[in-house]
Image (cartoon, rainbow, N blue to C red; front, side, top):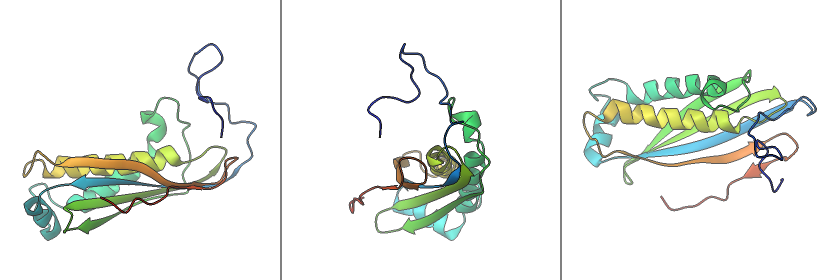
Length: 164
């Protein structure tokens, strides 16, 4: 790891990092977001009778699409040809949480962390959009990188926080 920002040059100007000199390799990243809501809203989501339809299916597709468009959304992110993107959801009724896990993969010269995090974020925003008619107080929480592998920095994995 470097102790300076890679997207800022010596004069303080932001720029896209030149990755031409990096070697190609498989890059994998997983990220997570959590969406907290009331038991009533979560029950409607689980039953599939939210006013806007299939919340989790729509969120999954939105997240995958967002991963593919990360280079258009994050100004200094490189546009990447992803080899794989997926979004999985699980419901924890006791905690009132939908857990979103996104994964992105590519063979290239730069990592796919931003693609995984963008997918998780947009999936969470989509869930909010689809249930806001039931509950405006839904909270998007803990958008974070879980792990990444590949590249010069190798493998990194977040130590799991067991709390919600």
